[in-house]
Image 1 (cartoon, rainbow, N blue to C red):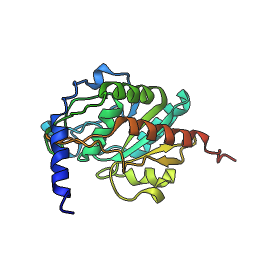
Image 2: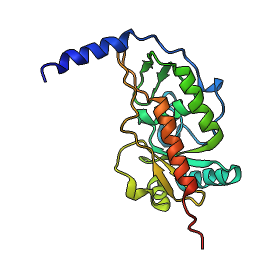
Image 3: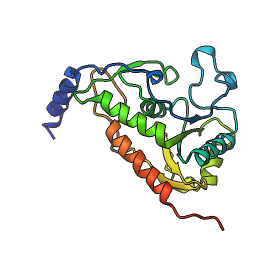
Length: 225
């Protein structure tokens, strides 16, 4: 155990010396279909400076899920549910990553900070591959699980509730009939970054996980009578 501290220091220094990843915004990437499309970002009395970005805290989550499912059925894509909340940093990390963003990230509602991504890997390449897969294969449904009136109802309706451990985000695929497919394993997704503080996913691993849960959902047997 006495060697743990020096090892951690060495890792911190190594990461800290890694070059800063070029910044790319989601506006430069391929579009990823996501729901909700329109919602009041200040609902529930949020101040203007802390507007909700991706989750509708006041609207019907069942309606959001149903619209995403209908879009998936019409396009042949797969619904990926990101069950989370505006205060959940990793929920925003996931959304930013699938939408192709790299470099500097700011999460003003969680609370505010800017984190800087550093890596020796070809992050832009991994980001493009992840974004392309998401754009071509998934419909992203952001389901609010903290303040909304019926977020839990989506878990119950899909059968995902029995797989939910309580942590956010809870990311899972849905079959064409709206049933739980498989959950993304988040345990080994964290990118080992440090100096300065950064929170992010390993995009190559995330891509493999999304492909895995997509394939499980698509190959699930039909439950229709």
